[in-house]
Length: 472
Ligand code: ARG
Image (cartoon, rainbow, N blue to C red; front, side, top):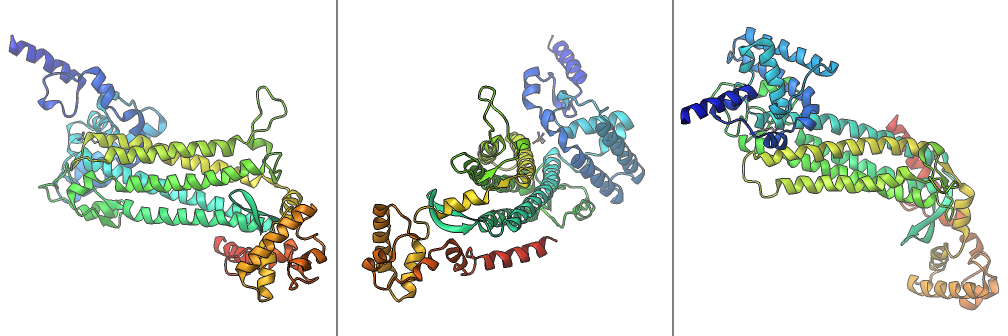
């Protein structure tokens, strides 16, 4: 009775043909199959999985671990499989769990039992670590390039609108006049740091894990350095246990993605505000806005809004990855399969968002007069009045107080600081003379801020020159 049952179950297990089916007597539950499969999303690792396998087979052949002829057959088989996937004729199977087993089983079916030699001295644990690292190298390069394109557009806009003055804000209250170009170049700096972070992250991604086996290394005389050379890795993971259990590099990458999105969302928020009727600083091109299904007059800034929204999604990916890895004992645990969806989603979201924001920025119209009017209004040059008094020898704290009084008086007189009569100023301080009005103009305010990194036109010009040269 028992024997019979075992035999039936073996048959079912055999029918399902699991590459690891040897020690099993029962077929996998269908729900478990669905639950454990990663093929619906990890199929996209195929170019890396195949390139990694080709390098591994080459090494196995070179080291005589498998006959060279067999290694060549394996490599040819893998190259054909690549073509099948690219041309869409490859049939992915959920029963085969993941991309690694899908490709391996296809290889065996294609070239026979010799295909089973590919997995010599290898485990899916080091294989998947390799695939993710190779995938990330490409994603990092791509996002790095996209950031460069965005920076170029920012510099172009700043260059084109070099003399446009706008109110600079703190607490979203008008604070001091600044050049629009100077404001834009603040974003250049943010994206430059993001690129730097990506480059730094790349160094830790670009380390080769294959050869760690399941966790302990292998008894076979493999040559990890050769595999690394073939795949363009400058160094090897030093510890086999770490090699299969480390996902720091994926977390790091996602954290850089989160910061990029944070920067994009700040820019987006400004674009949303600037394009309101209340501000009217810019117009976003029709092609990058959408209408309302009920209010015919509406033109909504959906691209910057969705950029803000998608930022939440990328933060979610970062938290997912951190939480997946938290408390995992060494070495590989199946939990780690859950790293892929957040990782892919973060990379995809950042790439798409960068592309669309860059295109949108190219097409914005800048309303220089509206920006200037906003900068002229009110008491935006109050700091300049204080600085004027400081230049006449008054301590800054005292000057601050007098300017406060001037603002109070001007409010009562319903005028601005630049239009308050001189006799009113003289009541506040005898140091104030006719030349105060020159000091209070927007041009003087901006033009005097020549401290290194300040908003003066001369600074902006110099910075733009060096950035344009750098980006050529
Ligand atoms: N699909 C798996 C993953 O993404 C590959 C590694 C499986 N390893 C294992 N021991 N089951 O993590």
